[in-house]
Amino acid sequence: MSTPATNAPGPGPASPLPALFALSFLCSVGTGIVTSGVYFLTTGAYRFSTYQNYALGFFQGLTYVAAAMVAGKVVRLVRRRLGVSSRMILAVIISMLGLLCFIPLAAWRETESPPAWPIWVMVLVYSPLTGFLWPLVENYVSGGRSGGSLRRALGMWNLFWSSALVVGFLLMGPLVGKAGAPGLLSAQELIAALGGLHLVTTLLLNKVRREPGRHIHEHHEPHPPVYRELLGTFRILLPTSYFVLTALQPYMPRALGSLDIPVEWLAPFAGVWHLARVLTFLALDRWHGWHGRWMMAVASIALLIGGFAATVLGPRIPVGSAALVVAIGGLVAFGMGMATTYTAALYYAMEVGQSDIDAGGTHESLIGLGYTVGPAAGLVAAFAVRPDAPEGRFECSVVVLVGALSLIAFLAAALLTHHHATKSSRGVSR
Image (cartoon, rainbow, N blue to C red; front, top):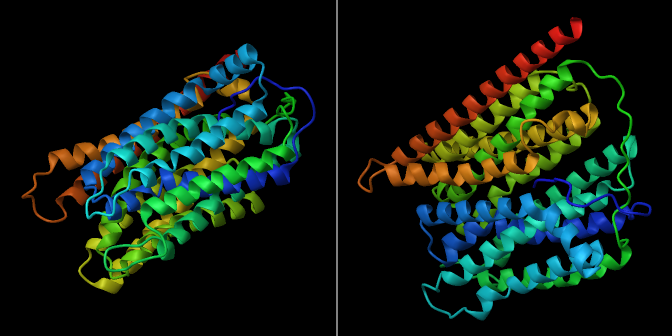
């Protein structure tokens, strides 16, 4: 989830955090399933191939990024031209998300192969709306707060929205029916239930102020020079983490499908990485020994690449118990890598100051690169591997491609930021 600012500083004090945390949690249950867990639904209910899942992921990322990059301008334009409040805009966005979730159910016919167009329509409209939703919610969380209170608010907010994805993936197991394992709901009915949850969530907006609190430009205390280098590195590692994530998600149903676990529990099993991310968020919030240390940058990229490789290749190990252990370890490592990268990028941005990270592009464009390149890498690997290729060839291809690109991004970020910092320090010494 990216969190660029989308609104001009608003008047008045900050909105109460309990309402914002509850709203974020409930919205994340829906957005987590529709944008992250949707591949389990498309694989099980719509018989999507790996190639189709990657294509869906590519266009989902593309539409999200397009929306996130213009969200601020659009919100300000709507507020100025129509005279509506940010709270009203949030209500409209969440309501539209809810109504979109009824499309698959409305078009559903109980057949072996339901038409795929409803899921495409829903996801490709739903995704850009989340590109408007989350930056605006973050604006409410951060508005009117500074210093320690801002850091605590964002830290708790990270725990709430990320833990909601754990709940969402757990619910997908026992609730959604599969072939030979009927559940309480069909995939279409589950998505419709999420729509109802979105509509109910709008009631929480009564506890939120009309506008986010005024953004406070705080004075930043002097920080070690290495913070600037680490900030530059993590500004590249952040979109790299989304690149690895979006390369993994569309393939995860197939990767985990070969494990010796019941098919209806594949999605909850995949939720292990979400749980690992939540616990790592909590640990990094409590332990501050990582501040200013390069080991976190090295550890994050190692965890991301290693976790990705173990999750994709682990299920191919012939011994069933070993495959399960490797896959679990890969999911845990991947979740830790995602949390480490996200937390460090946010921390150094706040410590160094927003004005110091304007150069070199925006967060939106960088994260957008990750959202689109990840599924594109999967598409390239899927297209390049012939149908008659030996088993496991695709897995090796996508691991090598994603791992190489991630490592190149990390090395380039470290070298460029170190060169920039060295050049700046020489200029100051003169």
